[in-house]
Image (cartoon, rainbow, N blue to C red; front, side):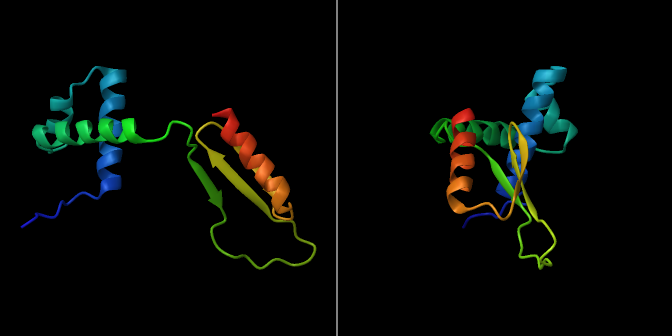
Length: 114
């Protein structure tokens, strides 16, 4: 029988990232971070190791991309709606009226910057 974790995978990743950032910035050990956050040090070490394994298996040319708005918005004919593209290294606004070919060019260029 598998025990369900009280932490989602996303929460575990956030904890690991924060732990490693604190280790780099403040010199805090993984064991100390675990104790400060009421997490078993064995558990946190396992999460860090799993995170490293996942990083190794990820393709290196991926760019984290967030598009907003993420739902349909009704606009009047006179309104201009921009789409904000946030990546790990920049943020740009593009008009929603942009044609598909131009959008593909922008996304291709962003992929090439990474």
